[in-house]
Image (cartoon, rainbow, N blue to C red):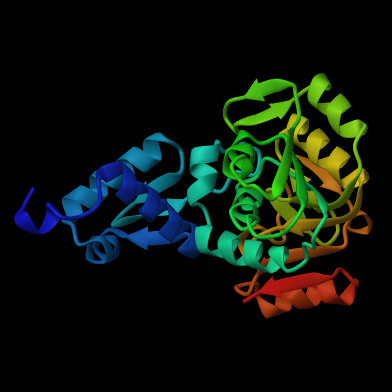
Length: 262
């Protein structure tokens, strides 16, 4: 490694950033990435080779393209780096809807985890979640009463699922639910990949006065394995301002409320 590469990110960190860059642009050239991350072309090729081994990208001549697979359930480490800036903006917009005394249900999405990070100054909240990630974030907040669903630990998502978790949710009521998913389509509705997680999301929505879907713009007009809910089940979709205006118009024309986070 030459001296210009000694002060850059560690390989694992750089690969996460490369993947996040490709989530926004769908493809990238080796020389382009080398300039962005200030490393050699050879280093970038090794990074892309590692991402290809993980089935996140496919290498092409001079670069790589993103693998899009709506049937594959990504683990939490992969989801944490995807569209992070967009998730943070959506979380900030979602927080505006939360009021003192709310009884909140947060699913095991990384979007809900970003929202959880903002809840330390809203008085007298109750947060119910099946997410170990969310629970670890809010457990130290003096203003939050935390309720974690029992059940079977799903390590890929750091979530609790199964009959015990479902029984816990089925006995509770919420003022607001915030959840995410893998895909949203104007006809097929809101869909996701893992049926156990879908059941938990569905219960949270069903037991809530209002439900809000936190869905970044990269997931629009796509369809995943199974339906989470219809648009009649939610108060609004919260997304980022990167949503294409033509796509936004599609949802506006069929009266689906879409809130754009700046």
